Length: 616
Image (cartoon, one colour):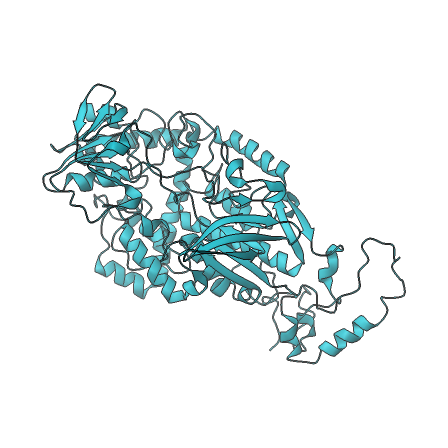
């Protein structure tokens, strides 16, 4: 059967809007030489070509670019070893791309995922505290290649998400290349080999692993941190961190201090408050926006109040199962509204002011219009300066007699009490530290790149990246959701998907064009980040509030979020590779060695239409 024009369309082709073609067919020159030779005897003809003199002109022997003609076909890919660190959503998505989305890559990529734990899941495996759930609608927080019609509620619990991750992993055999209980202790770039040398620990033994390309999928929510409060180590009661929850302890009939009101704190407080016999005090430094950007009723297309986290009925789930297009449209509607809602993050805009007015009204209602609670809990700064969270049940908890809040700073923790700056002593049995993670983006292990640059030191003060996916001085190195990622713009998993497709385009180019290394130019990264600062000035993330977007500072550089809309980011990473932004080194002294013997694989197939490009 002859290859059609559609089948010969390059996989990296994009539409005028920057969308990548959905066609993933045999590419011009992408057929391995052996596959073609199996159909016809072209091996001998290629050898006869290479045995003849190189035309009528002999290249001067003193040319520094002189090399003999190769016998392989043009664009013949070389095998690449790729190592991904972490088997959360990021690592599993890369496994799917190599095995399924781009099946031709599975032949050229030897992929290994090192996971330090004994199961997949990443963040959702570790965070199991009471009330843990995603604050993004369930149907847009799923693998793009396997949406889930069975989500039980509008916002999914952590347990349900973890169950979905495990189920999807087994369904697609994504654990094929995972090595569990394997911790990367160090990664060093070896310039002479053009590879990364990793030290991996498993079962108490260390070994070296080599990779042509290293992908960091450990994420920013990997290493939790305890608060630096004087005396906390002297507390004699139950002390627990939200990311390392002790399920064996009975928290009922206890006096409980919850430190923090970030994403985990606002979920833990209502769960502790509804336990029998508890008294709960939330210690926080200031308010946070607890708000539904787009209420569930709007997403679900229902009039009236549906509750803060309505369930999906069995009828709705059955409809999604039986009619995938209906579920796709449901997901598209959510994404569309979420992308449009990004405009409210423009500083001092009418959209932001309107959203703030709605948020204030919504929060006041949930607080029972209590003047004291409204004054303490409704922020004065711009909506979106900190991450917005739905916080189901959080505000309502403070209207209960057994739950209170204080914003007086903690000055000391003793054996049985929390002391605050206002002179009060809060006797407690339990201290829950919902104090988040190390959000510096620094890798958890030494990562030594070109010229001895240690990424942990480089990012100690201000982490910088190339569109959150590559780093200066770190050749052949990718990060999924690195600094300035699309982490507050909508569907995080769609952004991961775009990142993965971008990585594949580079890997294909590297394999087919005989590239040894590629790395973003330092000047390019600097210019990108400096200009991003200018865009950030127009967005609410630079408003004066303490936020992990600015590395837990009130005023500072925004290092967590991409400067612009999600649609702009999609256009950048989903389009043609901006190779002009990179330093590229080839394995040969002549960069065009990949042209081989001057022929492509597809043209040697006798059934191929060699006039497919004629337009009229």
